[in-house]
Image 1 (spheres, rainbow, N blue to C red):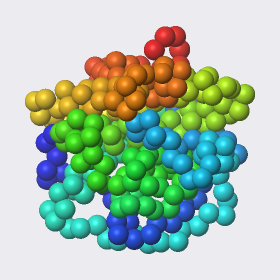
Image 2: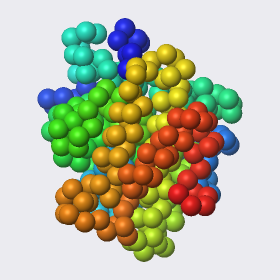
Image 3: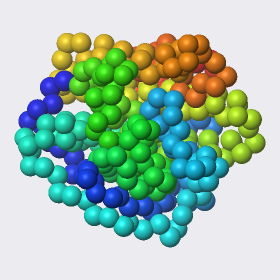
Length: 302
């Protein structure tokens, strides 16, 4: 990916080496942006989803299931830590990379929302090491990157990228970019009402039904990552092999591949992110189309 020398996002919180703080809840939005919403509506503070969306198959655990504990969020959450100043450009290559990728996602989604007469509230991306606090509980490096809809922030311990390469067999800078674009896709879903709708519907679902719905949520985020990849191509940022890196990452973190690697067999009813083939298919669909309105994973077969 041709990222060097490009502008970095200003929405990066560097908490590496320090304790984090709880952010306030997302207040939701009103209006009618034309992005598939899975049959839902925009969610206000009472509809803030209680799901923590984690790359791979791990749900963040803080002593109880966050799906049960976080719906509705908290009005009293306050920040208890300040962020460090980001290293000067060129001093930390991985931080520079993250900043550039996040800026490109901001540019894309600002354009998409503006086309419908809407503003795009850019999500802060929190860099941490080990553990930090979030609006969704304690963020732990072992959970992988995730988006917290309560404070509308993306959390990532940058050591995950080494694990993505070594443990999951998904090397390359565009595999890393795919991870960020996927999590930002969850922010888009929070704004358009997809995540609040999931939270509402899951109250009457069995675990198996909730897993199946979660798969559709995750595949849409993969499709949105593909839309961003298309945008990156339009900006002449793609190197040869970049899309293959993203598709390989999607394969390596599919539920079936992960479960077979971890336990020797797959249990489809427990899938909550989608199979390798599904994740690749929806990323590729977004990439080929470049249109987020083609990312409706909630209608028909997936």
